[in-house]
Amino acid sequence: MTGATKLTRRGLLRGFGAAPVIASCAGPSSGEAAAEAVSPADPLIDAVAIGPGLAPLDLRLNGAARTVEAAPQATLLALLRDQLAITGTKEVCDRGACGACNVLIDGEVRSACMTLAHDVAGREVTTVEGLATSGAPSPLQRAFVELDALQCGYCTSGMLISCSALLSRARGPLSRAQIQGAIAGNLCRCGCYEQVIAATLSAAGERSAL
Ligand code: FES
Ligand code: FES
Image (cartoon, rainbow, N blue to C red; front, top):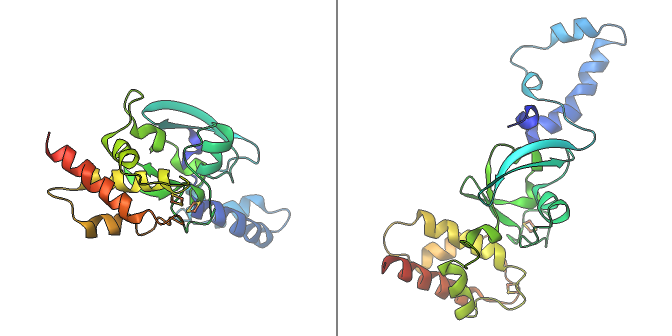
């Protein structure tokens, strides 16, 4: 983990919003006094300034340790697609509303378009590419193909991430309601919901038969 990994979205926004206020209160020639005026409990103390250019961060990406560089304002989605050319994760709404950009961060489903790249420093990120093992599709990915759980494919990687997370945490037989809940944030304009549910039930059955 690098020294820049403490920056959070809240910290970034506070940094943009609060720093000028502190500066203006401090006056042009009272930098030391301003530093003393900041309480030790102030979140700005924990925020580490990065940028304005590219800054390095370490993460684990699809099982491999990576050191990459990203601008402070870059989203994880931009880092994946534009910088690293890992394009399985799709961009559709770019505002956290469709699920197309879902990835796993430390095993939890998250929208890559709503996550700053620097917020995943030191964390484990899994994209749809990382669901395969040694290049072989996972049982869930195979079931999606076999049961026609996609048409245009724009929602598919997000659907696979959501359903994979469900399969990872589910104990016992899987229900339709559980799958519907897992994909509640995944929009499919092609209307493949029934096939997605069928494929996920199939993969769950294959797993429980092992
Ligand atoms: S592209 Fe991220 S939620 Fe739609
Ligand atoms: S397969 Fe086209 S949006 Fe879902």
